[in-house]
Image (cartoon, rainbow, N blue to C red; front, side, top):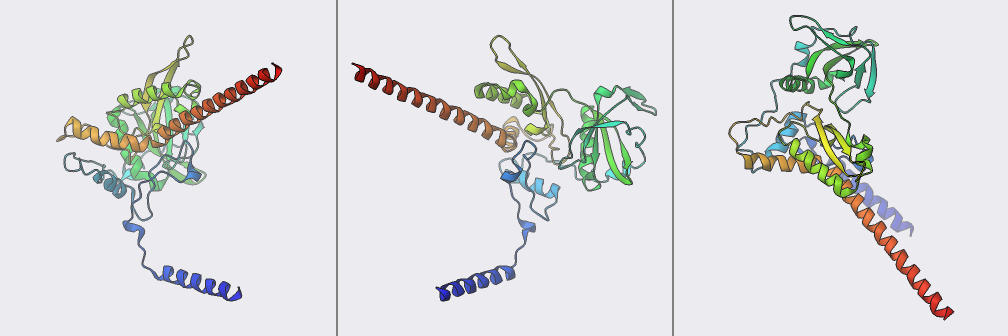
Amino acid sequence: MIFRDVFLQLVLGACLCIAATTPYNRSEIVTLRRSPSKDRNPESLERNRAPCVVPDQYDKKWYLGLITIRNNVGLHVLDTVTQFSQFVTAKNLTEKLTARDRFSLKGRNNKGIYTLRSEYKVSGADARTYSKETVIVKFIDKADEPQGACEVRALKQFGFFIEAGRVTVEKDEYAVIVKVKQSGAPLRFIDAWINAPVAQKRAVVQDMKKLVHDEIDFGYNNVLAKIVKDETTNDIRLEHIEIVDYGHPGIWPTTLKGFDKEIFTTWFEARWNFLWENLIEDLDNEEKGKEELDNEEKGKEKRMQKRRLSLNQLAA
């Protein structure tokens, strides 16, 4: 027994030594999987990036992995938009954004989203005023400024950009983007969605899919929806949808030249299936759970019928 234990320890030690001396370079490894189960929450549907792989390189590799379309679509990840600080450092927005309230917690690519307590005024040649209800402010860490640059560019294209600049909070400086607030709410916060039958949820998802076909980043956590419930039938339907994430790596222009409908649809379907995988899986599990519950109820009813039959026979 003692000899066996000592021998096993020697073998284990040898294995660890070999593993420690084996060259291992993760810089060439790119993973395409959902976040680990410990991150299984509404915020976690993200592409895992292996260490040493910068975001734009990773997304290029992911995109070029779709062999069927890589030679037909002119991909633009906006590599040239990397000098975010050059065009925001001129505007110090600290005073304008002092009266604010937190709207959401920090995210993977932001340091917090805020609403304002008063109207927001833009000065200069294009002076304009926005009511506080129509404005949302995104704080960006310095490391995420290239993504912020991409977002500014996309927001301008869609007419949602208000202003960009910097703020100082307790001696820390952050880049900020002030943009138009979109209406609606994430699906996970809509009671009509939460309580609806799975079949109706699937129908709404298909409606959303059609509406975001030509949008930019259509991950389900980046979609705000307005769902209406029929008080008579309790059926739900999608009334309105807004995309709210325009940052890199979600910049995938869909008005590209040199591709046809079939090629784009191939790419769209692949990306849709990847981004919505968690939600679709949740619907599958919900449906499976309901079926199991129904089967369990049916089993209970059958057992009760047998017991009643047995009691009736005994009574007879």
